[in-house]
Length: 276
Ligand SMILES: [Zn+2]
Image (cartoon, rainbow, N blue to C red; front, top):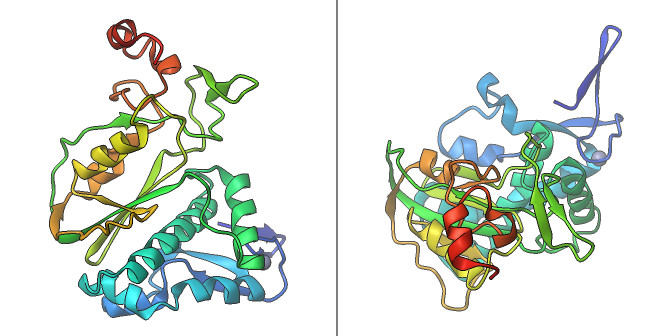
C-alpha cells in the first residue's frame, strides 16, 4: 500500500514516518497469532494485514504484540482478566488505526490516524484516543446471520458532519468520505468492534451505544468498567457486527444520531422529540 514505483524500483516507505531507509515488513496482525492458528503469516491473501515500517517503528509496534496472555485470550478464549481485557482493548485500537491507515480509510481518517500512531509509537506515552470505545465478545461459534440492526453515528472528525463554532453538529452532507463509524475484527475466539468518538445524540447516548452493541452479544471493554464484563461465550455474526454502526444515515436507525441532524432521515421522530 505504501510502496511506490520509481522507475524500475519499488521504494518502500514507512507507513508512519515515510522514511525509506531500512524498510521492514510489519505484520499488523502479529505473526505469532497467525502461527497459533497454523496459518503462514506471509500468505499472499494476508497481504492486507501487512505493511511497511522503518526499523524503529517496527520495533515500537512489536511491543504491542508481545502480550502472550492476550494472544492466549484471542486463541483460546482464556484468560479473561482486567489485564488481558485492557491489553486487548489497547491492541484493538492501535491495530485498527494501523489497518485503516494502510487501507486509507478508518474511524479517524488518515491524517489523524497517522498523528496518533506517531505519538503513540514515538513516545509510548499516548493513551487510547479520546472517546473511542471498544466492544468485545468471546465467540462460541461464528454464525451466518444477517438481519441485525444498523445505527447511524455522527463521528468527530468526519467532514460530512458540519459543525458550528462551538463544534455542535448543524448539518450533514451526503457524499462518500474516508471515515467509517467502526471497525470489526473476528479472530480466533474473540470478536472486536472499535467505534470512533461520536457526537452525542441526547440523554443516555453512551449507554444506548453499549445497548446496541449488547444486542449482538458484545460488551464494552474500553472504557473498562470496574464492574468487569465477563464476556459469556456466544454465537457471533461478524457481518452483523460489521454493519451495526454506520456513518451514512439513509436507511439506518437514527436514534444515536444528533437530534439536529436527524431530519430528514426521521422526520416523525424529530417532530416528536423536538430539540433534546
Ligand atoms: Zn517510521
